[in-house]
Length: 567
Image 1 (cartoon, rainbow, N blue to C red):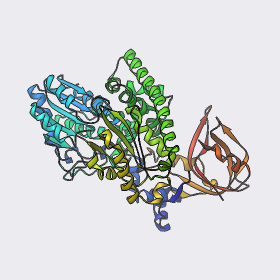
Image 2: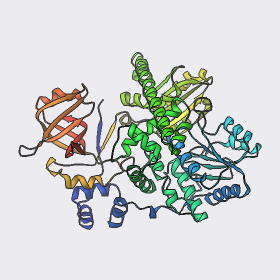
Image 3: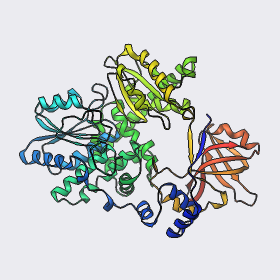
Image 4: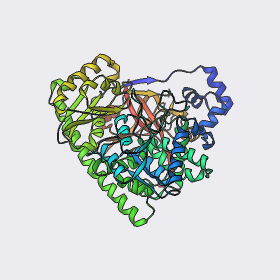
């Protein structure tokens, strides 16, 4: 698949020189920092040394005072409190944090996670009925509820009040809850809008600690959960999220909770856990419970402190993840075959596929896999409870939630973000939805948005790469949306020696730019197709990340290849 190489904005040389002198870094680092809106010493200090003291006052969030007063009233009067969370990583970590913290101070508290297959996303009638039957008068929702207008009204008829904690975009009407914590409310003055669902839960407990006079270190013991949610929910790692991710990763590496430690070992990670390790190793195992069974297992593991119980629960999640991967591979292959066998689908600007026996728990992953191959807005649908239900994923710069909203007349339910959404509709409306969605997207999407974008920080020469340079780059972590790992381009490269193909997929080789350069090792995962061209001696340009390779305690720098262009 061809790619677009886009360089970040050029920066004035005087500004680069000024920042370079002010914080004592070379011009390349200064340029990268300026591209990230870091313009002076204080901003650089905050960026490189994130401090928990810089977290915002939680009471700046609209309704925080009401939320805390309602929870305290419930505790003072002996009401039963139910913590209600979504079944994904963000939801389960949210529940583990809020329920796990509050149960230390109040016994009449429990948690509820809806069944993905039977109840679907968000606050369900079955969940409210369960709360009513078990005598709960207060329900605190996490990572869901901002659009639950009808369910909040239904809860009221059962003498249940709601405190909604969510980070998704509200609809036109807010639920009639006792309190609604969501920085994306139009009337919320909270200065940072991009918290994860677990991040909102963290702010709730931060406010609770302040009001009750509890030591904040009691809350910071749960900060590894917040880091996992930030990584897995792919929220921007900027502002408060950067502070929480930084300190959460520190705890994850030094003293993680027992359940996360078990998952880290099962994922094969031993030290220096980063955002990527969570996204591809820890997160999928936590998610597997909700995808292939019930997410309650994940919460139980995250809260467990009994060694044999932890081992059993972690092993169960690992097994569920293997099961998920098998479904994922099978369904992805079926989806790709459906596209390849249809000329219309191959030429479309969208992918919308429906098959009634696909596993609901993996269709979001399959949508992402299809984008990897075809790079266009994609919706994968399956049958659940007599309806077509699906997951949508988008491409860079295109708002798939908005496109789905334009088809709302055909939908029973939908919700989500710019790049990911969920939807439900009648099976007999799938065909009409496909046609309308294709038309809406075709009218709005730009041709260049249908080609993968690679955003490059700057061009450098190979001789500028050394450990001093790398050690500063490393301190720019944690990396993720809003603070991606710096991506470099070097031109006029040639291979040194013969490249090697690993496992018939990956390419390992050495590169030089000038004859006097020391050969630099490079690895291109999934790029064995370039073997003949590289081995031929052709000159090429390469986009890459700089990484450290530790083999038998010998540390070397290597280039992880993102893309190659031949001159």
